[in-house]
Amino acid sequence: MKRAFFILLILLSFLLETKVSLFGIMPNFLVLPVYYYGLKRGGAKGLLFGAFMGAAVDTLYGNMLGPNILSKGAAGFLSHSIKMRFFRWTPFLGMLGAFLITAIDGYTAYASLSIFDAPPTAFSRAFFIISAQAILNSVAGLILRPKDED
Image (cartoon, helix red, strand yellow):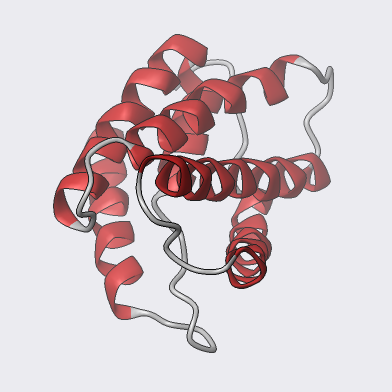
């Protein structure tokens, strides 16, 4: 049941990411399942899941295979290290973690696109978009929390 619910959330994230726009900014909801999976399962599994999600994003949306594999893989790996650095999980820490992971994902994808292809937009515009996405995703950090076991 939990697996089916998680898969449904991933599909809903794909759908909402393409259909919803807030003030002309497309949200980055797909990093949230990667963040959650890395919190729950650990760094190596988070890395693999993030790379898988990034490959799906690059295949469906991108014109170049690789930037989202790198960025979402890093997000999955680093989300576990956020959990391991603190003894007590708080909602504020969850919000901060979701904000940081979303920002890392966005900046990594932007940097790899800028290095290996033409920059998708000016850095000032990218900074604004990534910051807005991170603020939006930080709200989800209130409910995404690690637990010992499922």
